[in-house]
Structure formats: structure tokens, C-alpha cells
Length: 275
Image (cartoon, rainbow, N blue to C red; front, side, top):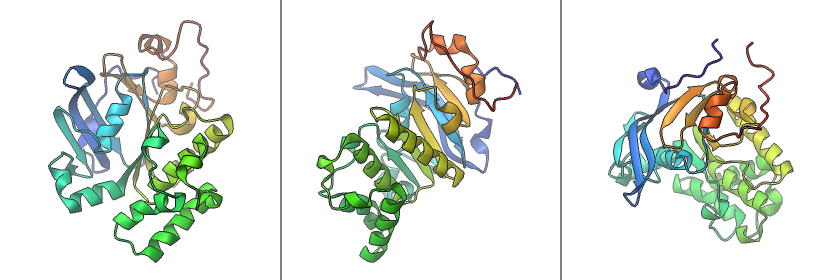
């Protein structure tokens, strides 16, 4: 395998039967004047683990919001599970419910995601929206809390929790829906080292379980653990390269150009990378 990442983002897989999410030529600006995405195209295939790389403000979080149906592009198209995702299509209750049951997002700021009076109610909110009865929802809540080791927080108010605990609750609220696709925005940001390790191990476990995972990050140290494919944003809000973690990390010139490292940065290539 070549150690050079592609200096373009090819989309030959867009018509593949295992393509779950397909974005073509996305453009998005905030307040119609501040560009965030400029002609971005991306295909996410079933079972992939993709890292969106780039400096702060390059468009990573905006792309995740588009994938999650939280914002909609000014131009371009987005298909999820074979269906167009637009403001109009998500007004259809059946489409909206189906889409949101199959794809979940964990935001960088857990305070923007956790809003119920108690942890138990927060985690149960999604399953109840899927029309599970209360016993079924309660069983799913107990299962997810046990998985994440937060059963002792069940009756706590989210605003009383630490940042790491809130992150776990936000993740639990998404996992309780059992989605096929998981989106993480800067998952380890602002977490203490122990919680960072816990979260990386969880994401690895979810990948082994067959979940499709897309996460945005500018942290290069965990790429070999959390991603099979890296997609690199330039500071001009375009996608400028893609490749395996080894291929991308081997391109010091690329990482300098997109402001992911500085001239004195030291990089370690993944140990299992091809020679």
C-alpha cells in the first residue's frame, strides 16, 4: 500500500450497496456570510470508522451536524440510508423517526445535549420516542447504564454531574436508541485522562460490535485506535486529502499545511502500519 494519502477525496463508493451516508458537493455558511463547508463530498460505508481531521473552525463540526440532520446545506445533497435528508423530508414523522433511530450524535458540549430532570429520564427519552412501552424503555435504560457503569447516577440531576459524568450520560442517551451510525464531535475534549481512556476503549468496543463511527478531532495520538480512514479538512473548509491513519500521519507537509501540527511537533506512526 502506498504511504501517500490521496490529495482528493474520491467517491467511487457512493453507489456501493454498503454506502450508508452519501454527501455530494455540500456548501454551508453561517448567517449566509461565514463559510463552513465548501464543496464537501463524503461517503460513509457500513462498518467504517472515519476520523474527520482539521484545525478548529475548518468545518468538521458543521459536517457532523449536517450528517445528524441538525442543519441543512445551502447547496448539495445528502442521502442517509438511501433517502434524501432535507428540512422537508424530516418533517415526515415516519422518516424523521426512522432516521433518528438509526443515527445518533454525541456533541462536544454535553450541556447542549442533556436536558431532562434526571439521568434515568434523559436516557429513556429516546426509546420512548420510538414508541417502546415504559417497561421496554426501562429495560433498555438499565442495560445501557450498566454498560457504561453509571447506574449509580440514575436518579441524579444532570446539572449536578461532573463533565465526564455528563459525557457518559450523553453517550448513554444515544446508545439507548441502538443506532447503526454514531457521530462523535471531539469526543475526548475537556475530559480528564481517565475518562479519555475509558471513552476511547468504548469507541473501540462499539467499532468491534459493528457500529459505523464518524468522529471529528484534531487529536492525532488516538487515530490508529479509533479510525480506519481519515478525511482531512483544509482551513478553506474543503476536503483536501484522505487515507489510513498511517498514510495521513506520514504526510508531515500536509499536517503542517492544514494547521494540525507545528514545525516542532513530533509524530509517532501507528505500530501496526505497513512499511
